[in-house]
Figure 1 (cartoon, protein in one colour):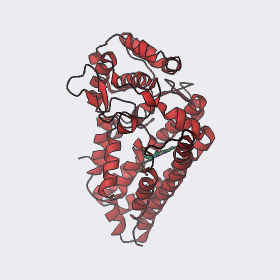
Figure 2 (cartoon, protein in one colour):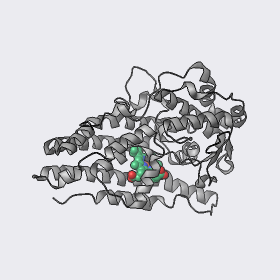
Figure 3 (cartoon, helix red, strand yellow):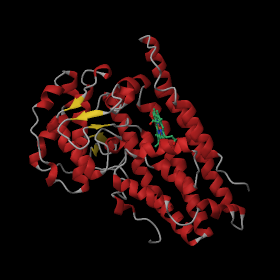
Figure 4 (cartoon, helix red, strand yellow):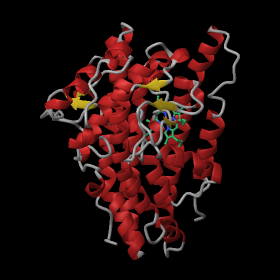
Length: 386
Ligand code: HEM
């Protein structure tokens, strides 16, 4: 095992992190996927998505071998899949994806080790820079394929990308922490923790911008309409049927959300947070939305020799313990802020919708607050005695 991890070995860019920027398109042979993905929102509005999808030729994805090409093809096919599934709204979700989409999508998904539906992995690959030589600033980021939600979606996406790109600024500190853990190097651990703490402060303050870019009801009612997944919460308890895919015809797909970002699971793992089984299971389920390469990177960090927590607990001066605790506190602060975000953008709009339509069926979001507050509180108990 080397002294630290190399992110690029796991298809994580030093520039855009876990997000991927697609500058090129796929070979011409695959242009029907691009064409249909580009028009998904308009076709759904015109109720023509299903009929147009059924006209697609069945293309052989075996020419695609490069990770980035596979990721772009996956994005195009899950766009088409989402439009097909949700064209008639949530109440009339399609029960099956036709073979001309299902066969290549499942093959590509299996190669990437990712689910055959839209996840955060696709959201953070769905963008380009307006000015290709310009910065990775929010103003310079635009969706590659539009999702429902108009300008609010553009704001949501560009902020999510800005946060993913900003994640890369923490990579040197993460690498140093791993080196310090392995070599029990207290001085290196201290300086890396301080760097990580100041990075995290900036990173988490970006999330405050959500209030300026997105309206709660548009987020809840429109933007998430393609992001629901195919599972029991969407009237598909056995998952979606992928026609023509003989080995696993039905597949469960979890919804797509920022909870699937890698950043917090990596932070928790570095800090050695020990969650009870139900919360571990929640995080494990989120990881099913990651591709295999990203899971491998995470597992490498999880199995890394040494423990930052032990180093911070058993060191000779309190400075390292204080730095460790400061990061635990900052993460707790973010999680408290996140509870407010989720209240504004999910809990309240959900209540409004249920009241408006007199919905009396069980509330799928009742689990949210206990779960999120529970995770926050467990992660905060990780603080060490000084
Ligand atoms: C308006 C913005 C946001 C909304 C509405 C929102 C919504 C949610 C929801 C509903 C969950 C519950 C689990 C799920 O359904 O997937 C969740 C969990 C989570 N979200 Fe967000 N989220 C937002 C922004 C963010 C941002 C910016 C991040 C940072 C990357 C983030 C990171 C997480 C994490 C890590 C979890 C898992 C619980 C935890 O580790 O504390 N969310 N979020």
